[in-house]
Length: 587
Image (cartoon, rainbow, N blue to C red; front, side):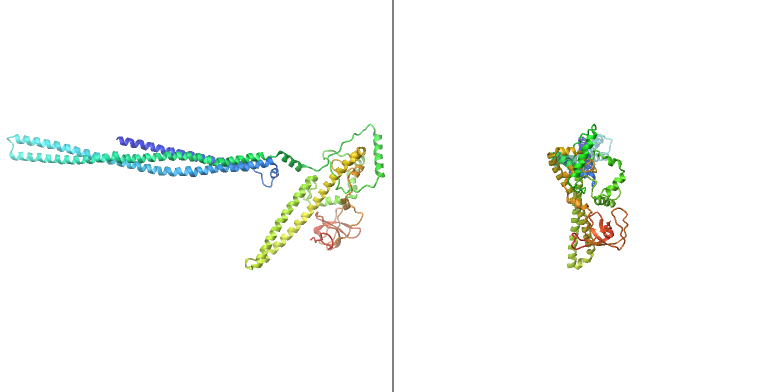
């Protein structure tokens, strides 16, 4: 009975040990879910603040502070990956292994307690056999005593016949024999039980208890190892997490405030000249001021002839200062001043600007970025040239690859038809030619802008020398400077004449001498030239080319000495003279 109680206690304790293991497994599972959730949230957070492709945010990441933030986002992504590693390792090394171990432990525990119950039942059966044999021996002994007493009583009675006495004697002997047999059986059963009991308490039960003890100790060791693994999984990723944090620190230390400030300066530098000093206007002496202006005009008239300005060497001033208009400008209507401007010498330059505007879509900026300040325009044009050169390189790489493929097809016709790539090669050649024309166009605009900037720098240098030598003349001519919006007053000051030397750009707009003929052209379509500067042509008409397309989509032609103008390049087929520079055919 005591053994049964011990088995019950051991069964309860071992079940509690299994419950502890399962509780630890559940704890680790929830930890892995937390790690996965945390890693997912970190990744989503990093992705949320990553710059969008082809957006304005990408431009912002040229600054060191923005790049440091981007590096932090990337490191946080790696940081999240380490938490995923923690979750994976805990799942494989702890949760999975312990789950399998618990199943094995349950089977082993079931087997040990089954053997214990079996041994307990066997000893109980032996005990019952011993008790039965003992009771039978006791009963037979009592029966033998009663039979002996009855025989003695019959033998002493003189009235009983001899046959009855003999019968009683035989019955007593039989009972004595049965008692002896029961005694022998009881003795044998007792010896057997004692042997079984000895084996039970000294062999079988201790062996079962030893197995249960070993099982329980293995369970305790296993849960301890799992707890150590739990800590080691975290410890293994600490160096990598530390490296991520070190990279974030390194990125933060790479922030260069001076460099970022210089990038802002380069990005928003306009190239405008700073405005000059504003002179004091003495309204108490109007007559004296008028005389001063008249004398200035006379001195200008008496001087040397004015150098021609094509508008390219003139710099712009600050856009937040209003222009001082002359009385003549204030009185004349805008349309009259515009017509007068269009009939002046630089009309060709103005018309070219108008021509470019014809090819622009509504709402889009000018193709030549003429709406930007000089320095910004130069940067945009340079970026466009670089982009076109990259496109040309890509097309050339494709052409080279197709050429090699064609050579392989020619040498090995079974691999493919060489003629199948001719169409693509021709298409690539046309694309490269178009891209080169675009590069020439943008390089021309770029050279124009760089020429203006260099001339403005030279003008500023000469202006500084002139002001140092003639301070009084500069002060007297202050009102004739450029207006802040970049335009000019009708009367050019002597200061401006002396500051800005005549350049070769002015010859481009001088229409006094007729341009020489550089080729002929044939009109492919009829064109009605309704705008000023254009000329109407009929389909099939032959004309003379005096100026080829400069990249703006227009060609200048001449019908006779009195009729010339611009037509769209796509409307004519041009045949340039072989000796003409850059001769090519436009279709």
